[in-house]
Amino acid sequence: MNKLKNLDAAFSFFEARTNLEKGFTLRNPNRVYRLDRMNALCKAFDNPQDSFRSIHLAGSKGKGSTAAYIAALLNASGRRVGVYASPHLLNYRERFRIQGEDFPETDGLSTAQMLMKKLPEIEGNLPGEGGATTFELLTLFAFLLFRNTGCDTAVLETGLGGRLDATNVISKPEAVVFTPIEREHTEILGNRLKDIANEKAGIMKSVPQGGLAFSASQHFTAQHVIKRKAAETDMNLLELPMSLHRITMGQNTDKKDRFSWQLSWKNGQQETIILSMGGRIQAENAALALMVVRELETELPRGSRALEDVSLPGRFQFLQRHPAVVLDGAHTPRSVAALAEAFNRITSDKDDIRPILLFGSVEGKDHRSMARKLCGGINPYFREVIISTPGTFKPSNPEVVAESFRSIGADVTLIPEPGEAWETAAERSRGERPILITGSFFMAGEIARLFTGSE
Image (tube, rainbow, N blue to C red; front, top):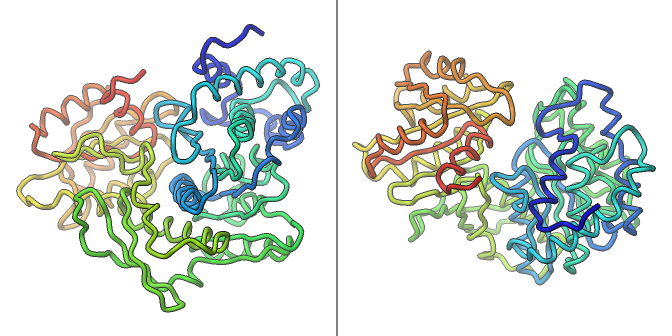
């Protein structure tokens, strides 16, 4: 294989493989959902996943921000931390962070060159059918990159499920963390919440002296599965609701784009945290991260400001501040409700200036309930909505989504082409009305590309 000229060529090569983020295989899923393939890939490179401590996250939502908060706190405690997360908004580089920053391009290129030089030989003996998938290659790249750049800790987010996810080749996690688990990916994980939770709980393992597991508040079915698996693996399970009494909104900070939250812990201690990403869900994710890191690093002080500047592409991301243009990949009723409340908090100074909602949703998501959360009721967050297409990565039906919003009385404009939709929103704003873009991570990505001019 010819030597890579740049890292983009490597990512293009990875993406050209079987990419399950675009949709699930119609054939036997055992072709790709099996750990012996990933184990073989890692073994060929002397098991890079064993060269650092690992914190492994699984769940249906909140993994990305929880991972980022954990990493920021561990960085503040003196560790050198790499984060592997998905999906990305604009570029695959977003999936890999070291010390909270972009990884050095030279390190990324040399890592990719090493991987691809050896890949043809490895794939000749890879278990199952075909070559390595996109996610298997990205995961291997992450392990190699973190080893090559001297990370002592990696925070790893599962891509799908947990038990057979490519990240689950780590054998001795320092901790496993569960964000809220919901019904999702039923084609692969099963139709029942019990089945889905069981797949995600598969990241728990028996380790010497017992391991640590942490969980956010869960539906009782998922909670029961996690508790049973913790008992089977002799892991010490710590649940956020058992430690945190309540979360309340704090006083506004001196920065308009920051959010203050008061954490009341059950041991009687009070704590104020300030976050740049809005919504109560973010406060819950940050509280979970604090519980995890305080159990691992006793020196972390209360009131740590390490969380304040944590931000992620597509999570309450400001494209513009005056007036606010915010994009967020929220795509469940609960998450869009929390997003709208946070957006309203920073844009409600002038009651006569109504915000604009630019919305797109892929098939399979509950856009009817999201419409009710965003535009329903006597005093809705949004009255004016522009519906568009959330890219072509996954199928969508903007006409059906538009009808969901019309049915609850919203003033709806359907503009299928995202570029035209964005131009219309900007024109209607006239530099005064705030704009929120949400409904899908893919919708956020489409507008981010238009706004930034990125390919």
